[in-house]
Figure (spheres, rainbow, N blue to C red):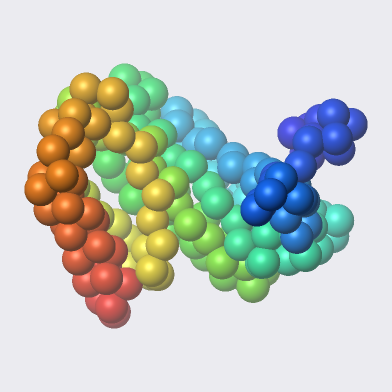
Amino acid sequence: LAVELLQKDARLAATGELGRACPGGTLRVVPLFETVKDLREAGSVIRKLLSIDWYHEHVIKNHNGHQEVMVGYSDSGKDAGRFTAAWELYKAQEDVVAACNDYGIKVTLFHGRGGSIGRGGGPTYLAIQSQPPGSVMGTLRSTEQGEMVEAKFGLPQIAVRQLEIYTTAVLLATLRP
């Protein structure tokens, strides 16, 4: 909520074509959950946030009923090791999706993955396919670390193939029961 207040006081606004303010006019606020402790509390934090009438209405009015939530991979891996971190990330995503569903809000999970395995890296297709059922629903956002941008998008043919991988994985994950 502090970020929303800062936006208002600083008169920040998202702009569209020709520099005009977009409908709603505010930038999206994206909560980040990365440590194991944060991941375990993610669902309840989102529930508390969406239970605030002002914020719930703000998301509906200004962001088309859509909330983005970021899950980070580095800190949880450092906190608890890869196996525990993977499980906590999975459960956190389930909890966040359930919280948003409880309030009639669409959610996009934003994955803050790194290039190395310890930072959440690995095969993109498998990573997307391993998301909890019902958590992709046609949308997914993911970071690509600097060292991976050149490898995955450096040549047009490779970039097209990478986009095919993302698209196919998102479609299949969305269609999975």
